Image (cartoon, rainbow, N blue to C red):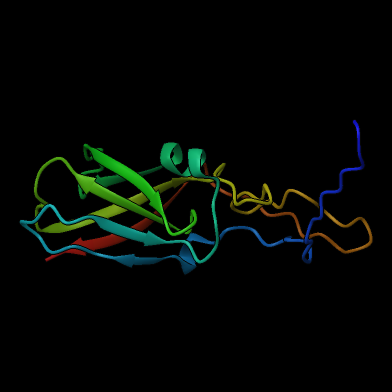
Length: 134
């Protein structure tokens, strides 16, 4: 290099908190419409994993066809179905291997401080968030 180069970083506190789908907020569309279902995470999630590992099923557990997109700086997923929402029960299905930007999974943090007591947490392979369209 012909001259010095510096890159400054701003660093925050460590993120040792796993994503918690029970705290996610759903904006449920009305039945008989093609409006998107919105899932607000409350924190930024890994974009590619969120698209792959979050799906929507009907009351029978059948996967709904549609398009997912990530918005709001990776803090929100919108799912637009191929056809209008039918009235009745549905669920958002999330694989527990989804990660936030710090690499934390559902029920398992990426980084563990060896000086803190760690409680083991066991999770299923998926978490379901039920909702109903009316």
